[in-house]
Structure formats: structure tokens, C-alpha cells
Length: 291
Ligand SMILES: Nc1ccc(F)c(C(=O)c2c[nH]c3ncc(Cl)cc23)c1F
Ligand SMILES: [Fe+3]
Image 1 (tube, rainbow, N blue to C red):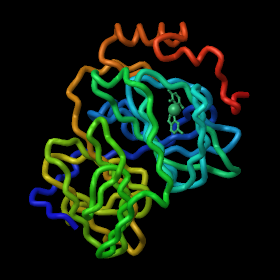
Image 2 (cartoon, rainbow, N blue to C red):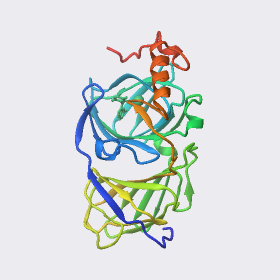
Image 3 (cartoon, rainbow, N blue to C red):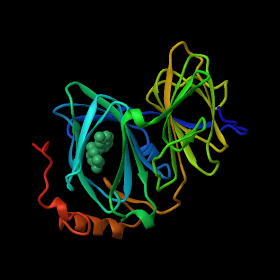
């Protein structure tokens, strides 16, 4: 894999514990919890688990992007513009909310649906852009294998393969599976903030002498030009490596509204209450899923 001259160390480690979110859904929130409110440009990373009739009924977003990556089962999303779709295991939905989206995200099948949802902040100049979706089926996501390492390139580049996803806030998002005994070196732009979230198995990150890290842990990476990881266990190791260029702007957040100043939040709340300035269609729209 790529060459790393100054591997990033693990500077903080968090276990994401289950909490309630939405209507009866369970999320393991790592970024976005009180000890790690914001990791510029990332607002939240939720590992969600939802079984019908629970879900995430009608709710708004403004000022950032949500990236939903299904791990198991399927979720149907529909928004106030009539945009509707179902994402299945391995599929991706990159939603740029911009000036405003109202949508629902509900289980599309029986049983437990699992996935990851990452919230990426937008710069002040992009917060009020037209909403936009980039959706990819699992079969269309670039997948490359080499020396016991399989990577699905959600955004950015790995093992010489690039994703077609346009990342308005420059972002890399790589889904790695390492066979037992394999060793990864993945370059990361030195100015970017980066983290690892372990999905399955146990991995050694940073230096080969580090202690193994298990599933549901978030690792904040320090400075350097890349990540080194080892699978010293007897089972597959699966994790995501996410990095992004920090925005370096003030943050004013009220739940799903993410702006730069309190005044802009107040204006957003007014827009939402008055169905104005991007929320016009929220006046008469209810999702079919709405009970
Ligand atoms: N504001 C706010 C308040 C409550 C919510 F539940 C939500 C929300 O929809 C989600 C929170 N994490 C999630 N992970 C996965 C999926 Cl599919 C949806 C969500 C939200 F946006
Ligand atoms: Fe949402």
C-alpha cells in the first residue's frame, strides 16, 4: 500500500456507547458526544441500529452534509422534494443539505438495519447552497484488494483508486478489511484531521507496539502523513479511516442546524417555523412513513 514516512499516533480513544436517538432508534455516537463535540470538520459519527417500527421520522437539516453508509439491511429515505430511495447493505448516500432538507430515514425491511452516519460541516460559503444528493450502489463503489488488505473507496483515494464522490469539504472516507497478519500503510494529507472507527475485529493502530483496539472504538489520530495499522488477531479486522480538511470557522449548532453564529441559528429557526428560505416545502409535506 502507500508509503508513510511519519505515521500518525493514536492521541485519544473513545468507546461509543449506545444511546437513544430519533424514534426508538439506537446510535453509538462517537464524534458528537459531549467529550468530543466537534472534530473539525466532523460534527458526528453515529453507528446506528434500528428495527421497525423505530426509525428517524421527518426531521430537518441545514448547513452540513450527512453521509449514510449501510452495513446491514436497508433504510428508505424520502424528502420534502419527493426525492425517495432505499439504500441497502454496502450502498452509500452522500446528502448535502445546504440551505435545507426535511426528510425521513426509516427501516426498509424487517429485522435490524445497521449502518454509519457521518455529519460533515460545510464552510460558511457553502452552508446555504442548493441541497444535493450523491448516491452510490454497493456494486459501483471502487473496491481494491492487495496483500490481504481490501479497501472500499467511499471518498478520496486508496491503493491507486479514486472515488467519484465530490467532497465539497475535502474528505477521505475509506472502508478497510484486513486479513489476519496484514499490515496497512495509508497516506493522509498532513493538514487534515483524521480518525479511525473500528467496525469489527481487533486492530493495532499507530505503532506496532500499540495495544489492540476492539469494535465500536473511535481513535483520534495525531500529526503525520499517514496511518499504519496491523491485524495481529486471527479474525478479519474492519474499520473506516476518515479524514477531512479543517474549516477553522466558528460553530453554532442547534441539533440538525449547523451555522456559524447564534444569529444565523435564530434566523434558521425562524425560516423553519415560517416555512421560508429553503423550507417552503416543509409546510405541506409529511413522509409516507409518518405515523
Ligand atoms: N436532528 C436529529 C435529531 C434526531 C435524530 F435521530 C436525527 C437523525 O435523523 C439521525 C441521527 N443519527 C442518525 N443516524 C442514522 C440515521 Cl439514518 C439518522 C440519524 C437527527 F438528524
Ligand atoms: Fe437525517
